[in-house]
Image 1: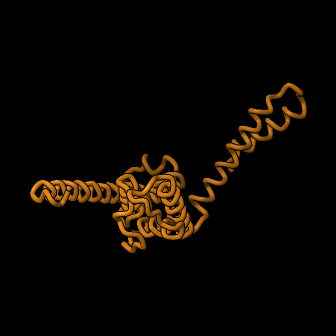
Image 2: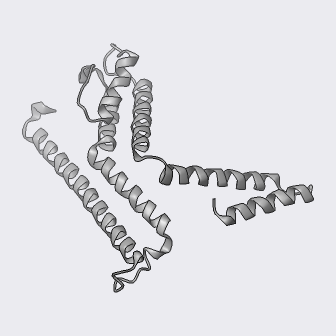
Image 3: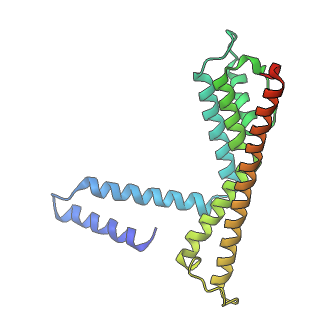
Amino acid sequence: MNSNNLDTSLICHNNLESSPSCNRIACNRQSIKDLIRLFFHFLVFDLNPFWIQLAYFVILSFFGYVALKITKPRTSLKPKDLDLFFTPVSSTMVSSMGTVEMEVFSNIQLVIMTILMLIGGEVFVSMLGLQLSRFKLHISSGDRVEAADPSSTSSVDYKSFTTYNSIECLGSVVLGYLLVVHTLGYILVTKYTTWVPSAN
């Protein structure tokens, strides 16, 4: 927590003691903001990336399970809860292992699984990792990264500057790859269903 937050918290605490008319809501709001900043700092800088990715996949799988549970299947045969939970886990991990026939799921359930495959895929997760690395570098270096002088090759600021730009460039390449591959895939599938009407 930086000194500004501590000063604000101390001022707020002193106002509470000295003045009965102090706005307790504003002081509580400031305390909550400070806690959120501390938690965010812990998540970004102190927590091992393995735990961040594990939490990401667990949360995605849980929300996928809830989404599949509240939507109705195509057939009257409802999958068991364990099978229904395994399906979004498999989709998120892009492992292509299913315990339920795809024909059981409705169109909306198939769209949910497709979205889980997209945001759980290696390329998308890599892009998120790059964005997190860029954000860490930006926060830890402050505005020095963007204001670094490229002519001073020996400075630490220039190293941060080049690292930041490299991560930004790689993030753009990964995003472009993701968009091009999915757009091309969509076009090919659309053409295939046009040429082979029975595929619909």
